[in-house]
Amino acid sequence: MSILAAYAVPHPPLILPAIGVGKESEIAETIRAYRAVMQTAAAFRPDTVVVVSPHATSYGDYFHISPGAGAEGNFRAFGHPEITVAIAYDEDFVRTLSACAGARGIAAGTLGEKNGALDHGTMVPLVFLSEYLGDAPTKFVRIGISGLPAAAHAALGQCIAETAKRFGRRTLCIASGDLSHRLKKDAPNGFTPEGAEFDGLCRAFMGAGDFLSLLQIPGDFAERAGHCGLNGLWVLAGVLDRTAMEARLHSYEGPFGVGYAVASFTVTGADENHNFTERLAAAEDAAIAQLRAAEDDYVRIARTSIETYVRSHSYAVLPDNLPPELTETQAGVFVSVKKYGKLRGCIGTFAPRQGNIAEEILYNAVSAAAHDGRFDPVAEDELGRLVYTVDVLTPPEPISSAAELDPKIYGVIVKSMTDNRLGLLLPDLPGIDTAERQIEVARGKASILPKEKVSLSRFKVVRHR
Ligand SMILES: [Zn+2]
Image (cartoon, rainbow, N blue to C red; front, side):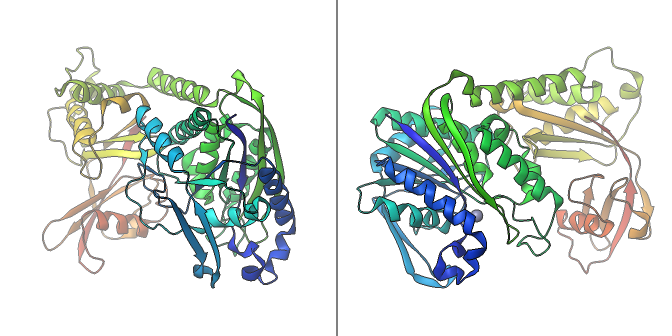
């Protein structure tokens, strides 16, 4: 016996009547569903319940598992210190889970706890569950999410399932999380139409037990929708990998502009077709292969330059048959490297430093991968997931004000009048919608204070991807 079932539940503290003081009646469906699934969960008489919470200690590149014999928490932050939750941790499970993660090369463990007290993401589900567990000797494991990609969350989920199997413990996994926080004008994080779109996808995929599609929701889209629950669902994808399950979406509501979904996934056996993690990797491989097959000479030089440098610490040799536009022209070039949609390095020159564009790309690519101070140097095992962009710049032209900018078309160079500090921002970047914002970010890159006098230049780019 190992994983018996998994659950996805929300964690609004106002769902508790003492905190909601009547407001909770607006999510009566959620409460009804919450009670129903937690009653079923308790009926499994679980030995171990693993809770994944986005509000436990979390790191960008590491999964934190709570250490020690147990922990307590209360709702003081929500005005109710008298509502407390106390749990015992399953220390054997934690130890074996950490070892399993280590063996698979997943960065996870009990180091670096920021706050030992239980978070509301962990406590809200446990308030409901404890009502039905009574004084059963159930132990818990608490895990924080990370900034790592979907595949890493799913791999951690596979370790949870493996650990549960090794101990033969009756194990449940709860992914605590809310969906979009941007469903309405007065929502906590403001409105975006992508909020409802995101929630619609999550509801459909949860109801169908389609964890492959949940793993493939683009991270930047989910971020714009303002969720806190998707990473937990990614962990469930690994927990439920290769299982046959009965998936059910019990309820969905969002009267306060935040999406609350209650779903259960009851394991009924094994199903080799539910190899979510393997299929995710295959889909990612295929997407990268398609990109590589379509890349032009500019991007190919950047990629081979980085791959050669990372593997052998030497510069690649440029091919002989390059077109004259690359070998007989000079220009400033920026090379950007992304991984899973997130920037992984970006370095460039706004005026040419090398003999031609091909060499400019060759050298700037190495700088982007190995010398961008914001990131660790690219490692060899990352190469298969990297996506490259090469921007070739037109010579910058001085402008007198922001009115001559358009962040979709022009990049900007901001130069301090006092000491020539210089900040540059490329055009057409996500989240940079106004000239003012563009200048502000460019100033920030060069640590130029808002009141310092600056001169402005603009440039265009030809973007190769
Ligand atoms: Zn949350």
